[in-house]
Every structure is written in structure tokens, then in C-alpha cells.
Amino acid sequence: MLLRRVTKHVKEQNWFAVGLDFFIVVVGILIAFQITNWSEARQQKAQTTQALDSIEAELSILLFLSNERLANEPCRVQKIRTLSAKLTEDGDAWAPDLELDEGSQFSEFALPLILRTPLRPWPDESWQTLMASETALHLDRAEFSQLSIIFDLASETDQLDEMAWRLRGQLSHLSMSGTLSASERRSALRTLGELAVIGDLILINSRYLLKEITLLGYEHKGAKALFQEQYGGLGAAILGAKSVYGECLKLDEFQPIFELVYTGEDDPKTIQELLEIAP
Image (cartoon, rainbow, N blue to C red; front, top):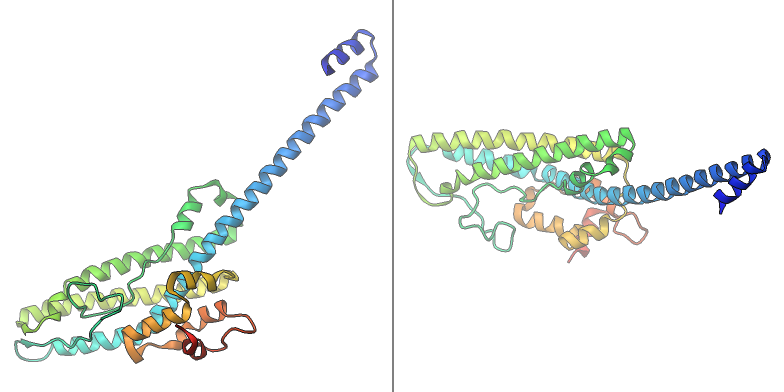
């Protein structure tokens, strides 16, 4: 219909009407483009928000894992020093000093662990999904850079964890009583030294992760529900760690994640209060 009107106006040499017709066409196209762009921008914003919510959940878990590693550090150092001293004793007789792991995350292993540290994956699935999508292009550059640092550290720490578990497997024979020759003791000490170095690297990464996640400034609004789903609550997770590692666990290292999760007026005010009401 519009084409017929334009043709008619051209034949009549009504150039004002022709110009008006073209103006209407151009305005219509521009409005259509604007609506399309607005719709795409709205959809992109929703996708970015959803991606960041998933990433924030992973950051909450990484923050807890970092706190847990720092809390467990006195236990790790104590156990390595004790085992190192025992391996340097004279004689071939060997009797392990092991605590039962019934009900813990280690209880299903075929052999008791001579060294125990938290057995948890360091998540980065949401970050990898984001990196594979166009949504990453719409993030603030500074925020993107900081998230890259955090998840690179998480990936490296996860790999270090796997290396540590493989090395701990080489010490599994120390969980059984028997004889241990001088050469076997030296070999175990070398493995123990490698484990100590890897543990130190994990400790450094944990401190760095804690710093970077805190600087990012996310509110972690869904952290309470997340920990309830993952661990039965933050208090239950801390109590679980304490039951495995004992009194050497440094509870105040959980303060950063505690302060992010419990912000309401009716929430517990201290970690000790949280542990008293935990299931």
C-alpha cells in the first residue's frame, strides 16, 4: 500500500508527499531496530545476571574452601612434623599412629589415610560456561580480569589437590604395622617433602583467593541457602571438619565466610553460637 502511495505521488510530482512517505519508512525502520536492540539488550542483561549469580555461588564455595584450608593448616603442619620425626627414628619396626575415620569423608577408603586434608573439588564450572559464551564480552573489564585471576587460582589449586592425593597414595603402606627399612623410610620422607611443598602452595593460593574474593565485593546473598543445600548448613560443615581434624582446627579462620552468610538480626553473632545450634 505504501509503495502504491509513493508511486502515485511521484506521478503527480508531489515531492513533499514523496519525502514524507520516505520519512515514515525510515522512522519505521529505525523504531524497529531500536525495539530489536532494546529486546536484545534486555535479554543479554538477564543472561549476564544469571551467569553472575552462578559465579557468585561458586565464589561462596571457594571462599569456604579457602577458609577451611587456612583453618586446617595447624593440623597439617602438626601431622607432617610428627610423621617426619617418626620416619627418622632408629630401627625397622613401624606402627602407625592413626585415628579412626568412621563417619567422615575418608571412611570409605580401603586404607586409612596417614595424612588427612579436606577432600573437596574447587569449582569453576559456571566460569567455564561463561567463558564459552558471548556473555563474557559484556562483563565489566576490571571485573572480568579479577574473576579470571580467581578462577585460574581455583583451577591451579584443584590440580595441586589432585597431585597431593596421588602422593598420599604412595604413603598408604604407612597405615599398616610391620617393618620399614631405612631406604623405605628415606623414600617416604621424600614423598612427605613433596606433599609439604604442595600443601604450602595450596595454603598460599587459599590466602590469595580469600583476598581476591573479598576485594571483588560480591554480597553472596544466596550463600546461606547454598551451604544448607551443599553441607546441611555452614555450621554443619565446620563441625564436620572439626570432627575429622580435631582441636587443632583453627575455627576463627572461618570468620570471613561466616560474616558473609549470617547478616540478619536473628542470625548467630559468633561462630561458637553457630556451632551450638548446628544440627
